[in-house]
Image (tube, rainbow, N blue to C red):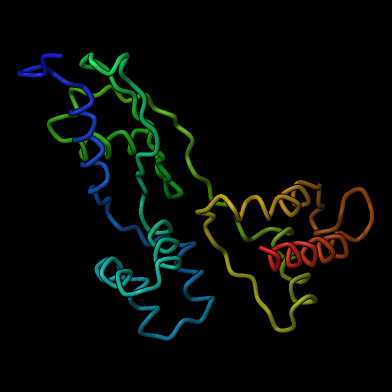
Length: 219
C-alpha cells in the first residue's frame, strides 16, 4: 500500500461524517410542538424556553437526555450518519465509500430542502459527494376531525378530566406500540364520528387504549 498523496475515499468520508455530525439545522417551532408544550402544562419558564427558537438549544443542554433528544427532534431536522460500506481489501486504498444517513424532517419540509441542508453541511466537499435522495416527507394529521373527537371522548372515559395533546412521533418504539390504534383509525367513520359499519368505535378504542397502556407498563 502506498497512501502518500492518494485520494483516499475513506478519509474523505470520515470528514463528511464529522461535518454532518456537527451540522446544526435551524430551529423550527411548529404548531404541533407549540400545542404540545401548551397542552402539557409545563411551568411558565420551561414552556417559554421550549417555545423560543433563540433559547431552546441552550435550554436542552440542561435537561435529562431522554426528554432533550425528543424535544430536539421535534424542533429540528435531524441528520445522523448510521452506516458505512466500502473498500475491497485491507491493503487497497478505497476509491469509493457508501454512507447511509438517517434524516428526519419536520412537517412541511420537502426533499429539495433536505438536499440543500446536506449541501450546506458538506460545504466544499459537496461536489465530491453524490447524494441519492429518498423523498419521504413527514406528515401532520389534522385534529379538527370526527376521529379526534372520538379519541378525546374515549380518553376522558379512560382518564377522568384528561385532554388530548398533539405530538410528533420522533422515535421507533412509539409507532410500534400505537400500531393497533393506527389500524383502528383506518376504520371508516361517518360525519358524526360513528363507525360506518355499525357498532360503537369508542368502546373498541377504549379497549385498545387499555391494552396499549398494559403493554407500555411492561416496557
